[in-house]
Structures are given as C-alpha cells and as structure tokens.
Length: 272
Image (spheres, rainbow, N blue to C red):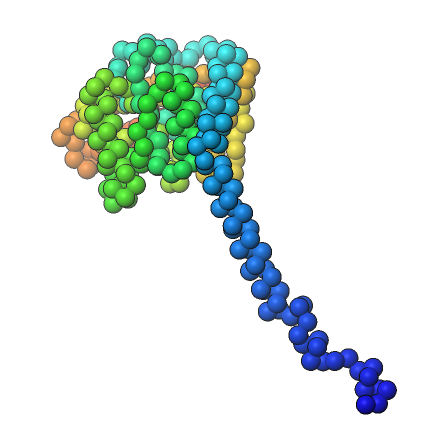
C-alpha cells in the first residue's frame, strides 16, 4: 500500500457513518418511541386515584376561594330564586364556562351533573362530589349514532330518572370537541323525555384567565372579581316533538345561551 493510499479517506467507512439519512431517521424514530412511552407513563400517574384526589381537592379549594372573594355584579339574576322555582330543571351552560357552575346551586337542592366518560373527567367528578353534587357519566351531545357508543343514551336515561326523583340536572349544552357554543340534541332530547324545562344560564367573573388554545376557550375564574350570573327564560320541549321541532328548540337554546353569556359579560364589565 502506498503512502498516498494510506492518506485517502476510507469511502466505505464514511458510507456507514451514523450521519446517513437512514440512521438519522432511526434515531428520530427511537426518540419518538421514548417520548410516547413517557407520555403514557405521565398520563398513567396523573390519572391515578391518588392524583385525582389531590387535584380534585386543590381545584375545590381554589373554587371556594373564588366564591368567597367575589362581588356580585349589579343586575345579576337571582339564581337561587330561578332554580328553586323551576326545580327540578335542566341547567344549561356552555363548555369553557362551567367551572363556576357548582357555585350557583342552592345547597338545599339536590343536583346531578353530566360528565364525560374519559379518564380526564375523573378530576371533575371528584370536584363536583366535594360540592355535594352527584354525577352521571356519558355523552349526551350526540343522541344518535355516536351517542350509543359514548354512553349518551344510557346517560340520558339516567338523567331522566334523576329528574323524576327530584334532582336538578347541570348539563353542558355543546358537544365535546364539536362546534363550541352550538347546543347539541342531547339536552333538548332530555327535556322532551323528562318534561322538565331547560334554564339557559351563564356565570362569569371579571377576573379570569382564558385558555385561548383550548377548543372551547376554557375560562379559569380568579379571585377578587365581579361575579355576574344570568339565568334565562325556561325552554320547554313538548313530549311529542318531532325532529324538526327538536332542531328548532336546539337553535333556540343556542341563541338563549349565547345571549345569557353576552349579558353576563356585560354585567361583569368584560370587554372583548
């Protein structure tokens, strides 16, 4: 072997270098697998019963602090009077505006809340239980097709039974991961099969943090604000309502809920 040959780079060795595109792809794939395993581990820990209790206790304490430090905005509805006079009723709220809902319930009235069946809702269930509110798990937004798969039909039956036993129902009107602030058929169907009125409601505080990246623009209430509550006129759905009338009532509920939220934000002096 000549001196020149010894100084010539080994092309075969260079070709096997880890910097080759296929090796980079392998490393990237390995990193993705590790990241996915870490996410699964983190979800498992955060969704454990112990973590659920810890987070539930913390959120409950924070909401009690919010409740204790709010000033009621002039012009707000008398939620106690409205809910008591229509009890048992279906209290309708939007997603993202629901964290203040437990504070509206007159403590002497029994209530159940509809919560989704996913693991993340376990913390919500823990929180409402601390407020003395029972839960029904399922999705009532889509009554047909997806509802049976998500437990929507079973949930509606359970809620109807609760209403017949004298429990009020707190229910988010819009469908999870669907179009925000667009009422689903589930809530108007519950009104039809139960004969109980829907009360379009809103509760907002002037001090809040809006999570703009969430699909429903979830709002976290903060202490020391002005609390505005608006309860609209009852919406009744006849027992013999057909599909066309159910859609009409759904649209009416959507409009009434949005009007309640706009008015609550005006009373709390929340500017766009």
